[in-house]
Image 1: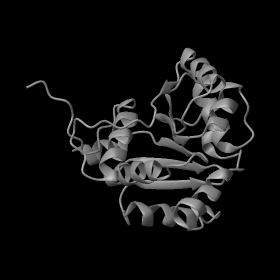
Image 2: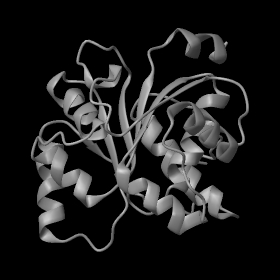
Image 3: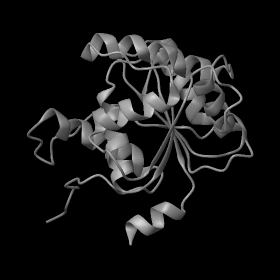
Length: 209
C-alpha cells in the first residue's frame, strides 16, 4: 500500500551540498527509493571534491551516470525514480516554481549554502531550487553539518527559520540504542524526512512505557 501511494505522490527534491557527511544523502536516497518515492537530486560543485576526500571516489558529472553512481552507493539497483541534475543546469525542472514537488531537503547542508540561500542568491541549481521552495511557500528542510556554529552561521539559520525553513541539525540520539554508524545516521535521516511526513526509515522511536 505504501509503495502504491508513494508512486502517486509528487517528487522530493534532494540537494547535496559540499558539507562533510555525504553518508546522510546516501542513506536518504536508499530509503526513499526502497519506498518507491521519486527523487530529484542535485549535487553542488563542491560535493564532488567531498566525495573524493571522504571515499576516494569520483562522482560522474553526467546525470545518467550519476544516477547509477547514487544507486550503487545506496545499494538500490531498482525501485523508485531517481533523476539527477547537473549543478549548473539552471533550466532544469526543479528551478521553476511551476514544477510541483513535496518540497526540498538539503542534506548535508554547508554553511556556504546556508548563507547563499539566506541571502537569496542563486548561483547554481541547488541554490535556485531552494529559493523556489521559499518563494512558493513550500517545505524546505536544511540539515546543517558544521561545528561549532559561528554567530554568522546562527544568524543565517535564524533568518531562514523566520521565513519558515525547518532546520534539522545532524545531531543523532542514543535512546534507540544505536549499534552502528548507520544507526546514528539513519536517526537524522528519519527526523529530516518526518518534516515531509515521510516515514520510510526503520527507526525505533521514543516510547512512553
